[in-house]
Length: 360
Image (cartoon, rainbow, N blue to C red; front, side, top):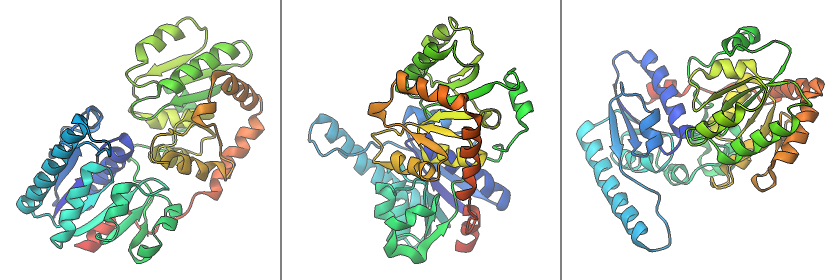
């Protein structure tokens, strides 16, 4: 069976696509697969070299006309042409798009050629590419049931599949997870992360907050900084006498998620799905420039009292330090937040990889 999987832009699109591919390979033994992505540095970093990869050179179009817009427009038409050629040459049995500009033309042309198509929407609020593609595809797979409100005209196509998670993301005994980081039992453990690229704002404000409260609370920290701030944070943390494990990127996230009592993070769809799975109390700072996706994702946890939301423009070291002292000194509050995840967990309609078999 020939399948094209297209995704790109951010880890929030790429990681679910890779998890889906992993499960699809287990399901279909005679599988010929092409992964279509963009050429951004994050895509080249995250996509495994053992996959057959087709790169598309595309950037989002901007309304303001200037030299950069002209370059984007040329790349836009080049991407359309190369996508068209790939479909004609490869003749896939099915195409699965995980959103972003890199997936749009692959899915669109495939649908016009009568090839079976699926789009997967990871966020609560549907993205621009998937919104346009919805009328043309066979199935619309959703990461969250709440997305249905944006797709009232296409209810017959909707299948709730959840966001595919990597097979190695399994819950580990907390003591074993703490041992992985050489951490102590009985001390509040905090995970800080800002998405696949890291967040300078979260990195800096969190460090300032810890500097304020380091003598008031007993904490141990796992901090995923991204590449840009790693060196400066490593030097800064060396002056604080607290247990810290600092990583630019951590592959074995199952240990981090299983060890922690509280997470401070953005609200990317995959992050939200992972902390729902691991039932982690959260302080969430939605990225404000992502088409409103992250704020809606965060509200899913906030309305169920699993998380506390702080807007980016109100997020600073002082209010964060106050909140950290309040939560770490109130374990009953954290226990209550963790137990509230039971309200969110639901049974999926189908696994995404099973939909491929239905199409075939």
